[in-house]
Image (cartoon, rainbow, N blue to C red; front, side):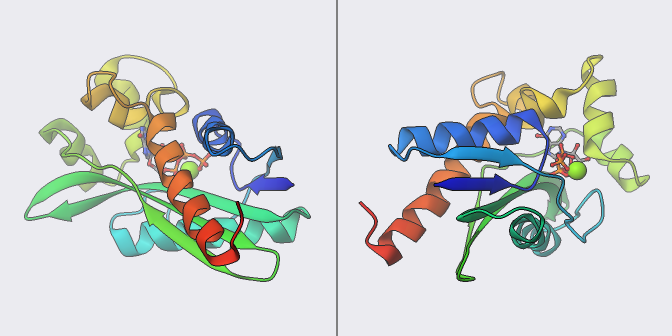
Length: 173
Ligand SMILES: O=P(O)(O)OP(=O)(O)OP(=O)(O)OC[C@H]1O[C@@H](n2cnc3c(O)ncnc32)[C@H](O)[C@@H]1O
Ligand SMILES: [Mg+2]
């Protein structure tokens, strides 16, 4: 089985690998640059899930495979508090689509201010933590859960939800 993932982000690719390993499906994995067709920083659930779906569909156009997976990170306002939001989508070769959402927690005022000014969460997190490339490593979720859930752990859970829905519908054991 060949899985095509619409990203070159290390945290996302390792999440997909770990998810398939955890459910016992042997596969080869390819990361390709995919078009999310949404803004670089999605600002609500609707836009974030759309980005995940577009990436999933685009991957199978860019490279042949059995399943295309798109993972998208964003932020959203809930009762005037800014939260992290995360979505995943999986498409089959025959065009079936599965979606799932991931963990989210509130972001601090410094981040909120930067987002309001139009900055992206990735660079804002690097400034906030005084580190480089947080989005490729533990991610905002890792920082704000005190390292208990990394970006990869969080997306792994999203991908397991996608695999489970696909298995249920296709009676895959
Ligand atoms: O290469 P791609 O796949 O695009 O990976 P990405 O890290 O840019 O991830 P997204 O496009 O899905 O995320 C949209 C924006 O939100 C940022 N972001 C999302 N979740 C994050 C997290 O947990 N930690 C740091 N930045 C995050 C990210 O850097 C982007 O600016
Ligand atoms: Mg991006």
